[in-house]
Length: 157
Image 1 (cartoon, one colour):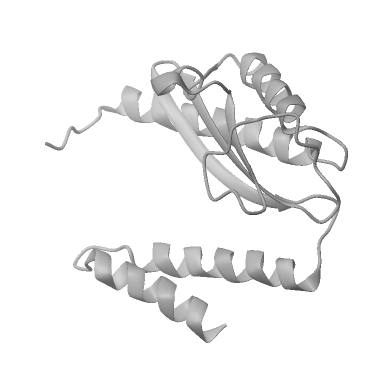
Image 2: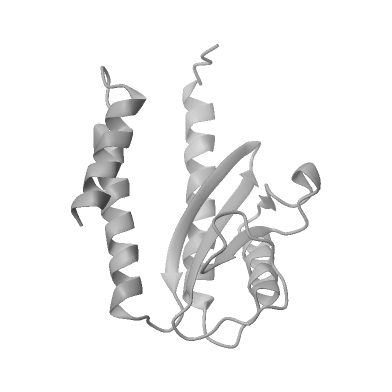
């Protein structure tokens, strides 16, 4: 079932997205070598509270953290720990914020203090594949059109 939101609800959704984006910007800037992912999660919790939100992840189906932090080989939804970030690591940050009854959720991948050309290429190709997938998500297209756009981008890189 499709539920159409009224203007107030749409604006509340936009605000939740903006709060999540601000938190993500803050956390991405805070990433540095030597920091543990648990310290990064605590910082994310502070930023969420600063903007008047609440973590959408903490406690959801028992999830123990405020953010999802995935380092290198961890694919998605990594759980914060005492793992220390090292120069050249690739870190995916996923932020979900409940704000005024709506959820803003976004993610970004960053390198810790810079990275090798190979890892930078991986991040660049991944971002371009995302852009092409989003561009293919339009009325009349199928999910297969989106996945084709992503696959062709990656395979041609």
